[in-house]
Image 1 (tube, helix red, strand yellow):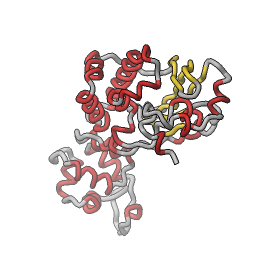
Image 2 (cartoon, rainbow, N blue to C red):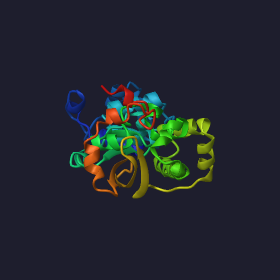
Image 3 (tube, rainbow, N blue to C red):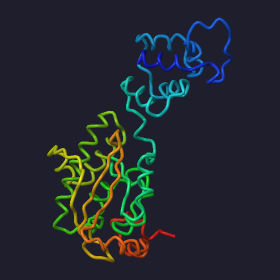
Image 4 (spheres, rainbow, N blue to C red):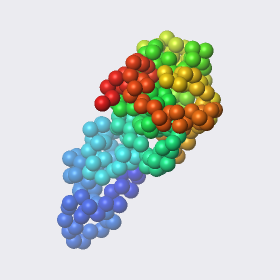
Amino acid sequence: MGSFLRSRRDRLSPEAVGLPPGSRRRVPGLRRDEVARLACVSADYYTELEQGRGQCPTEPVLHALAGGLRLDPDETDQLFHLAGRPAPGGARQAVMQDALRQLMQRLEDTPAMVITDMHEVLVQNKAAQALVGPQSGLTGIKSSFLHHWFTVPATRDLYPPDDHDHHSRLLVSDLRAAVARRGPADQASGELVRHLLAASAEFAELWGARHVKVRHEEYKRVVNPALGTLKVTCNSIVTADAAQRLLWFVPDDPDIVPALRALDPAEVWRDTPGPAFGLAGSWG
């Protein structure tokens, strides 16, 4: 942690943080006392941190150090990891990455959506809303499809009953892989798992089996209120950090795509409590 703090201090100029440059400066970036002043800690304590002798900083002190050193979100997470504290990254609202946004803009005629590794639906195009129902726009645990799948029975109406066990196993196996990538200090994944363990005996049993499987290409049947049971292939592209994925659906019947484009998602899912997380009835 001391080496990391020192490297971030060296890259900052006094002008970048609103301090006068002064004269006879012998360090490439900020001085230790300047960082201490910006973070509202004593110069002696900050010096001890860089030298690996100080008491492990609390979360408020880490936030103050991150602010003083102008750390970006990834660097802030790294600082927390090095201090042995839960990284705050999981508490930030998930935002769709630019690369996936650019791909989504080119898939207007294909049902497509972007989700996180916690199965939070970030965005859907109109064709995807028509196919599987509007599932974006919520925050916290309720933004995760996993929450609804294991706690709201009507959510499962999206798939034929014969497929429910299969989807439950896949969802839990995929979540376990994501939790392993995020690490034990991640707050968001830990909160979601604890919530599901308490809320669903089915989830608890599957979680205890410890199966791991990352979802890539998947063949599934979708029950659509307007078009009936549709057979689709669900493909995915995963970002480099595996935190988000773009899903797009290819129906077996090519005539389904123009039929989906002609549907109004608000009308299709208006009287259906699942899987649209209760959003269908609130569309303006």
